[in-house]
Amino acid sequence: MTNFSSKDLIPETRFTVVIPFRNEAENLPHLLESIENIQYPAMLFEIILVNDASEDNSEAIIIEAMKKTRFTIKLIQNKRFSKSPKKDAITEAIQNSKFEWIVTTDADCKLSENWLTTLDLFIQKNNPTMVCGPVIYESDGSYIQTFQQLDGFSLQALTVGSFGVKLPLLCNGANLAYRKKAFKEVDGFLGNGHIASGDDIFLLEKMQKTFPGKVMVLKSQEAIVSTKPQKNWKNVINQRIRWASKTSKQKNPASILLGILIFLVNVSLLATPVLIVFEPGNWGFYFFLFYLKLISDFIFVKQSGMFFNKKISFWKFHLQSFTYSAVVFITVFGSVYGTYSWKGRSFEKQ
Image 1 (tube, helix red, strand yellow):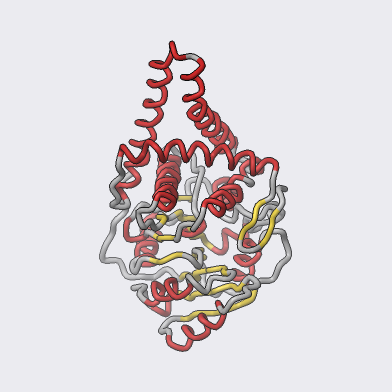
Image 2 (spheres, helix red, strand yellow; image 1 turned 30 degrees about the vertical axis):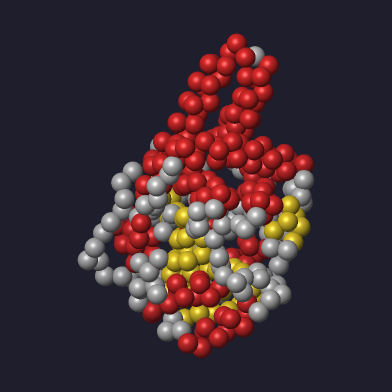
C-alpha cells in the first residue's frame, strides 16, 4: 500500500477533535503546544478536552492555554454511565460537538502540524466513513522504550496489512476519525460499554459491518501522531492486558484466530531453549525455527520502521524478540485471570 499524498485542494472538512484526559498535567503542555502548531483553518475545527475526574492541575493548564489560543478549545466534564470511562468521555464530547467529523487522540500525544490538512485531503479524495491514521511511540533509545516502539511498529504493520487484504483488524484511538452521523447510526459504543477498553476496535468492527469499503487506512508521514511510552514494565504489562482484555469480546473471528496464533508462536519461542536442553540432538532444527521466526518478524517490523524513518538493528532485535514473547505470555494470562490498573483505577475482566 503506497503512501497517500495530495496537494492543491482547498480545505473544507470540519473536524471536532476529541481528547479525553485524566491526570495528564505532565503531558498536556506538549499536546497543547502541538495543537497551536496545527496548520489548518481555525474556523474548520474545534478541540474538545474531556476531564475524566482528574486529581492534578490538568484543568488549570488547559484553562491557561485557552486564554492564549487562536483556536476553539472547549473544556467539559465526563459523565459516567458505563464501565468504560474513555468511551463515556468520547460520547459526551460527541454530544457537545458541532462539526461532522470526529477525530480522537490522547492527551499524551503530539500532533503533526499537517495532521488535519492531510486528513482533509484524504477525505476529499476517498469519501470514507472512518479513517485509521498512523501512530508512533516515542523512544529515547532505552531498552523499554525501544521495545514499545518496535511493538508499535508491528501493530502498525498489521493494521496496514489487514487493510491491504480488505480485512481490517486493528486501528488506534490515538489517531482515528469518523463521521458523527455514522457513529450515531451504529449506536456508538452501545453493546460494549461494560468493557473498559476497545473504544477503537469495537467501533471499527461496527463501522466495517455497516459501511463496508468505507473504512480506510491513511498511510501518510504527515498524518503521524506520536505518543509517549510507558515508564516501567508494570505499566507496559497493564497497558497490554487492557488491550488484550477485549479480544475475546470481538466479533471478528480473524482477530481472535490471529490472537491465538500469536500466543502459540511466542510460547513456542520461549520453549526453544528448554527443548534444546532436553533434546540436544535436535538443536539444529530448533535453531532453524527460531531464526525463521526472528527473520520473518524483523522483515515485518523493519518495513513499518522505514515508513516512520526509524532504523532497526537486527542484532538488538534478538533480545527484544524474547522480551516480546515473555510479555505476550504474561499478558494473555493476565487478561484471562486477573485485573489491571490504569490511570489510577482498577478494572476487572468482563
